Length: 125
Image: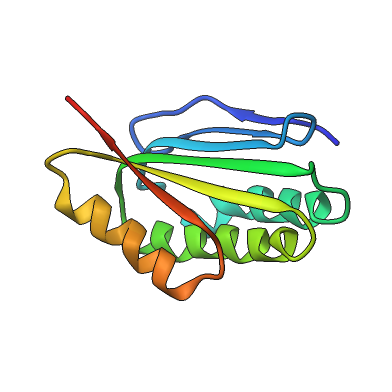
């Protein structure tokens, strides 16, 4: 399986999906012109990954901001990870800055609707 490695921009996050290590990372800002178009290859990759996942999948989400349409796409990513979780270990590491209540709350909202273990990790500025 190919690794997805996308360099971030002012509107799109840095993305690193590596099947060999089981590390999935999304970092930065997510306000793309078309969120569905941006996230579709990631969701498709996770469909394939779910067929033969790493024993231990680490998901690192470190977003400083995301818009509403990205929020739905990120939920789609997490739903694909629930499929992986059925057979293998999956942990979501949700990073937020110490004074960013909105980002903490967003992580807690995802945690409340998904069957995935979340670790809330505060980043000190």
